[in-house]
Amino acid sequence: MFDGFWDNVFRYPRYFITVLLGVFLNTFEPLMPLLKRPITLIAILGLFISTLVFITFTLRAMLGLSTI
Image 1 (cartoon, rainbow, N blue to C red):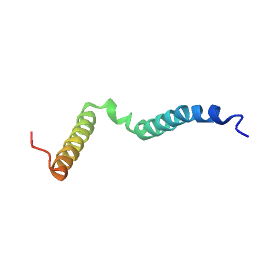
Image 2 (tube, rainbow, N blue to C red):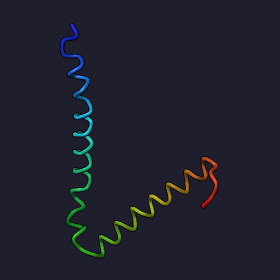
Image 3 (spheres, rainbow, N blue to C red):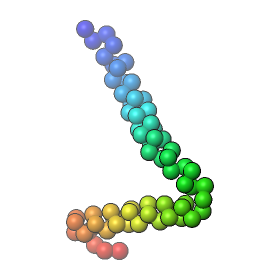
Image 4 (tube, one colour):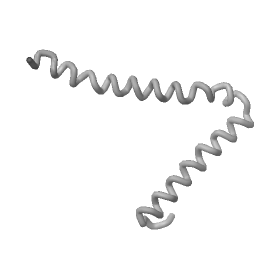
């Protein structure tokens, strides 16, 4: 009844990593031609960094953590 149970359980991390890698590659592959031009590279990096800063400040305010 449980012949291959642990084999299947140990396969899940590999499956999880494969799915995450596939999502990552399919998300960022369309952006690769844009990264070849310096202007769009700077714009995309600025957007990414400003999004992280916005999320950080929002979560700090929501959780009542002290400011920087």
